[in-house]
Amino acid sequence: MKYHAKVEISLKKGMLNPEASTIQRALALLDYQVEDTSTMETIKFSLEAENPDVAQKQVVEMCERLLCNPVIHDYQIQINPAGD
Amino acid sequence: MKVGIIRFPGSNCDRDVFHALQLAGGHPDYVWWNQKDLSNFDGLVIPGGFSYGDYLRAGAIAAITPVIEGIKEVVKDGKPVLGICNGAQILAEVGLVPGVFTLNQKAQFICEWVELEVKTNRTPFTSLYQKNEIIKMPIAHAEGRYYTEYIDTLHDQDQIVLGFQGDNPNGSMEAITGVCDEDGLVCAVMPHPERASEPILGSDDGLKFFKGMINY
Image 1 (spheres, chains in turn blue, yellow):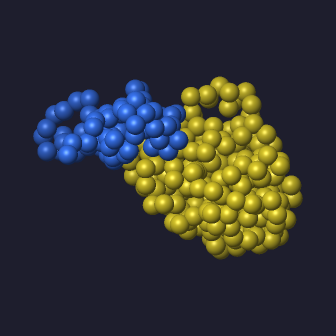
Image 2 (cartoon, chains in turn orange, yellow):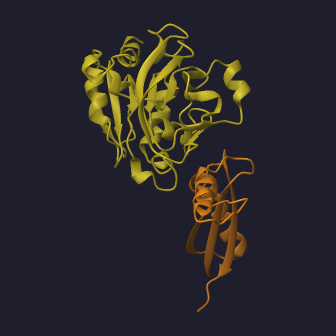
Image 3 (cartoon, each protein chain N blue to C red):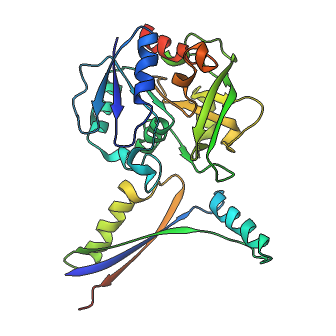
């Protein structure tokens, strides 16, 4: 069965996020006063697997081996059956 | 000493390193990312550049190529391995040195000469310097801010190799910009010793990195 996978990669809590602080400062230049700015990377793909658990397990492996650096990243995975 | 220079698509300091190794009296040769057997080399240098366009994270994709298996074998054999800039990021991604080199504090590319303190001279690459010697070399990176969860271990095991002297341009933890593995044979540095390998470049302070390696 085919599944859509979505991986959201964010920095661990407390890690400095220079991209987010630059965006927040740029928004302030436009007179938008915002706080708690953060960014995350989204990676989407589809894959074949017997069931959602197997798909999930494979994507966790992908995160651990390539998509994330466990020293600085957290990740969240969504697995959904591909619609027709 | 026969030294392999690892080339990935996007490496761009490979020929500079070749030149510096020759100046130091070594016999360099190039190795591509898909070569697995590196047993004919006495040491390796992973040069700087932008392997695989820095996609995902600097060094992340290079870290899963076949040549990494060969590099690990060379490390097991007790031969010296130096990663410079992108090479340092790759060694950190592979886990051959502790920690990570990530986005600079000010989210910009920094290219400038810096003063550095040699924190340990127990590695082959720093063996010809005095401990606490101040040297001058250039940096050129966007992802060079050093971070580790195990800073105390690094101190205890004498794994900090280079630190910024004075200004800390990229916001690295404790101004660290070079680390090594427990044995001191795998060394990852963000500054470019090959770009400071002869006086015409502005400094030859970096040449001893390669001389020390050749002498090992």
